[in-house]
Length: 384
Image 1 (cartoon, helix red, strand yellow):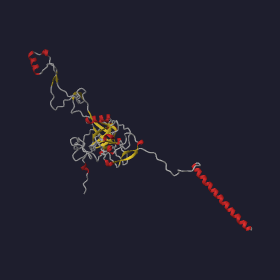
Image 2 (cartoon, helix red, strand yellow; image 1 turned 90 degrees about the vertical axis):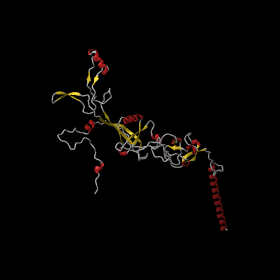
Image 3 (tube, helix red, strand yellow; image 1 turned 180 degrees about the vertical axis):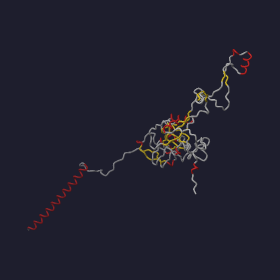
Image 4 (cartoon, one colour; image 1 turned 180 degrees about the horizontal axis):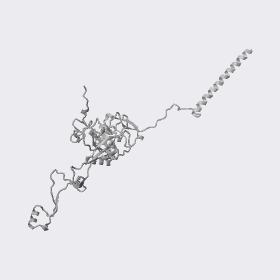
């Protein structure tokens, strides 16, 4: 009897525990669902959010690498969609036909959108003009290996331009080289002392009787204006005149401190600073003719510099006046100001401590009147 009561008590306890656990689970489920939905059942948790409608337009991009100066064809470009709201007016091309036939001003990488300022019409100006900064000009000068650092300067380098000129003294009125020539003159005739017969002869042969008569100078003579000096040996005055024409005086100075090199050699017919695969040859009637055996690519007899307009005028004047110009290559990245002094013979003698050679009773033989460097072949050693 007692054992039966104990078994019923155990069963009752198990049932009570099961009911308690179920109640807790039910409470937890109800609490989580109401917390996520604010007490309301969720009906759209897994539904996607609607996307706003975006207005798209076509813009032209490069489908391959396009080199500077290349004439763009349809196979070089394509179109992609682009939001109309982000598209600036007049910047992009919307159709391929608008780009075909245009010329690239600069290299264009693939997938890069093509804008109006990246191309120019086929009939437009030279490509070189796009490499010149605003307010500057391009000017070419002839060069040789001796005047261009053995052709070391290349496009993008910076150089200094040196000019050397010969100066002479001139007569301000005649604008001719000094000293002036001299001639023997005679005083004008006094018509009051001449008889009618002599006066008639003078007027017939000489013209105006008051004119100054000048004795002609013998051809080839150096009848220059001279001066009197006292001869220390004889203590007499002697008349001195020049033994030759005036010798010009050499002076050198920096003309341009810093100039960027735009191009070495000839430009291509389309005016590009770089060879262009799509360049169209210029008609022979107007095409400059390079030296025999050379072409636009290998001609190096000129250098084009970027100068201010005023320096361009100065350089043009110096070239026409016969001034010798040469280039000195500047260090990469050096943009500092260069200050130099004019160099003359006296400057060289003083700065380099060169003495005036003494007049000796002996000299070298044979006589040397002109300095000439030995030829290169004189130094070549003959191998056994």
